[in-house]
Image (cartoon, rainbow, N blue to C red; front, top):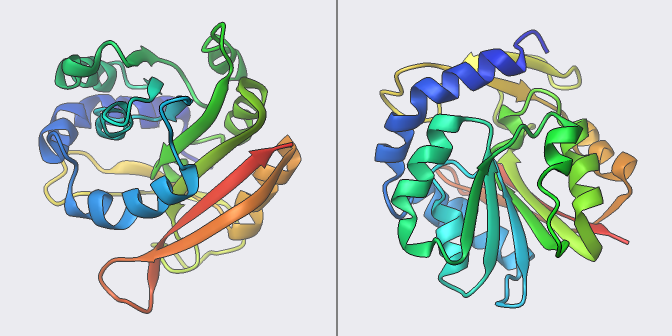
Length: 229
């Protein structure tokens, strides 16, 4: 991966205001119609849950969970994004705790530990934005209660790639939204690499979905449920 954590963080700090405005209060159609349904189906949130929302962006999914009565701890490594999320989701301050943390740093993740362990964790379309994913998977495993699940959605590595490499992990620049002011760092990992991150951390995979957007026969998103046994 030739692009560093610092490269990626600086870009997201610059893109934060644009992203917050573009997503608004309810996210865009892609997130609402393609990502959210399979993620929520595999996550099965209930009011008894305490959920870790990883790379939360402007907090829209956290707010969606809060509306169900779920308690959430949401974090992002962009301080600008966290600040905007706190403002946008102020109505749910009793349910959502927002904080800044680095998903690539095991110590930063451990600092998220609270008196009550998380029953579930979720990451919506951000694994492909994370430079070093191994610390995240290991850190989430540590933070989850027994039988807890980690549900993550990411771009389908078989069908959504902007290079000719599949097996070799690599990074490149690209944009997620039209008119995005700064291209972001993408980190490609094969299915073997993604599943391996789960297995190496101690998870088993007991749920999987593929979701299509523009072409009904070409999935653009995978959703994985990894369980701590």
